[in-house]
Image (cartoon, rainbow, N blue to C red; front, side):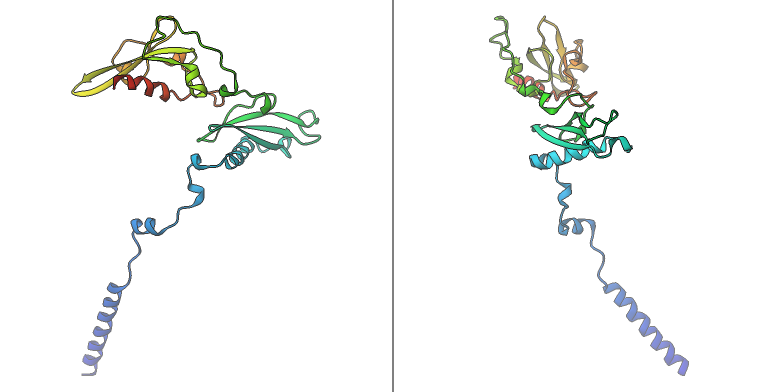
Length: 240
């Protein structure tokens, strides 16, 4: 009888523990955590940064590009905002620094946003760097034959966003249906009469060459091209 009473008591205790375990609060789900957590300020997109914050990031990026070697010790970095997409950073040797121990200017780099991409080092200072928008644009002479064309796109109308190496083009859009899909192919006629395929549809469904030969390289990032979307958007609007 003693053993029986002991077994019954143990069973009741075990059952109570099981019930307590079932009633215990569960860990919050990922969705609940995301709803209650406060996002870190460092996660803000670069596009929301102030000019001062972009300068700070550009100076840090320019410094981080340098090898960890004694020759670079003591170098200072001074950034200046060029426009919404570029910050120029002057690099300066300390007194007695540099390969010839003369100190002074060590060239500059252009840091492009929003990617915080550091361009190749250039000789001189940021005061000598002339971005596209700072250069006095030469007046573009447009032939009479295309002066009134609705697809005429002129470099001076785009400012520093002009992505081509020619001063103007005439854009045109061709709507087409391929395998039941409604597509838009856009092209540009460059000075001299050569036609280039501007978007992927035009490249895939025409015999015209790619736009690459007249697509301007980015001034601050080696191997990259200027954003061509403003010209593509203008050409696509001609189909509307």
